Amino acid sequence: MGGGLAGMSAALSLLEKGFDVTLVERRPFLGGRVFSFQDPETGLEVDNGQHVFLGCCSYYIRYLKLIGSYVNTHIQEGMNIEVVSESKKGALRSRPFWGRLHLLPAFIRYPHLSFTEKLLAAYCLLKIRFTNRSKQLSLDNESAYDWFRKNMQSERIIKNLWNVIILPALNDGVRNVSADMALMVLQDGILGTPAASSVGYSKVGLTTLNGDPAGALIEANGGKMRLGVGVRNFNMCNDLVKSVVLSDGTTIQADTYISALPHRVLSKLISVVPNMEEIVSNLETLEESPIIGIHLWYDRQIMDEDFLAFIDSPIQFVFNKNSNQDTTGSSNQYICISLSGAWEYIDVPKDDLIERFTREMTRLFPRAMEAVVVRALVVKERSATIRCIPGHYKLRPGQVTPVPNLFLAGDWTDTGWPATMEGAVRSGILAADQVISIT
Image 1 (cartoon, rainbow, N blue to C red):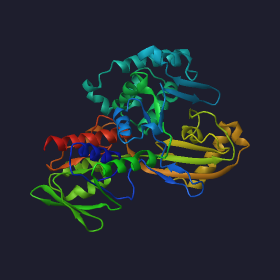
Image 2: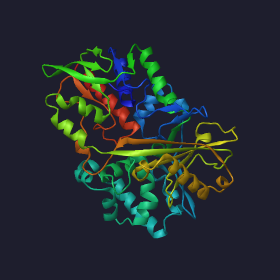
Image 3: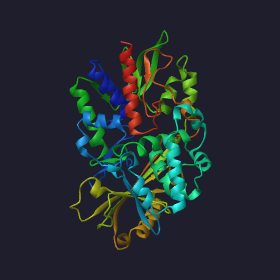
């Protein structure tokens, strides 16, 4: 139940083991919150949000290879994030031949910190490197901001370095996220191997990358799909799920059920299921964080880089979609501004956002002053991810439930990862493993 990354991954894992699988998805296409749509004016695929992944996202990369889509992505050899302030431009650039010290040269040259701040940041990196998160459970109850401040990090270091990484990775700022999740991102993504820190992105629309090929592979392996119908309720018998009733009135009966539905949808469905009260309460307590994508088409080239990060600007990241999706021969330029943790703007009218951020683009990109915006589009995802705030992790359920034949998948479940594409794929595989283990 649910055709996002979690549901597709669970279905493919079970089909590989010879199970008879039916996948139900409310919308007429697969992909969940990772999808694209055709813009009627430009004819281009527009993503519902700018999704990137890191080299450490091993499950997601394996999933892309399984469905034959990895060739449609680009991934760096090592991290290379150019960071721009009002007066300086620097980069967090990996040097792979330095091994696990691959970011040290970039640290030395990073212009957004003073020499003293670099020393303090280096001390903090060492502290992160040798922190055993599994033995410090209190990290989930502490904010990353408080942890950084306790470890000699100034407001400026937090703003100009740590938040540049953590905000897009966790869709929330350093002041809000738990220290546990912040350190997890830095340990796995920054302090791992050079390849682990590499930034990857799709060269095609997200539906072309994910939903379409996964659906084709599911059907090719004998799976059945019911698209365009949602789940209305569960029929229970002797504390087991006997069948599910779909929105068109039909029912599906199976031996085992995996819910890869959004957590808000699931909490309503299981609110009347016996022994699920604690899970329902926890799911209703989980908070969500929004993402906004502002898509601009200019009549000329205004940006040369693949993407840029900004500090001292309301713009966080700007992606050059011509370069990302290999339309470099076009005289126009397609730009996507990505805003993570976007509460400040989620209720602002779209026309106001376009005006405000178009004006900011002319300040950041001199060539934009002479350019004309020929098309503008705003995509808001109010419930893009769950928030990794302190104390959230104990609210995330595992794959097993008190109902013996009902299992859970979704980036919001307990996977050891934040709510990311990697977490979603991991959850689907973990749920499938649980089904396999009882058969």
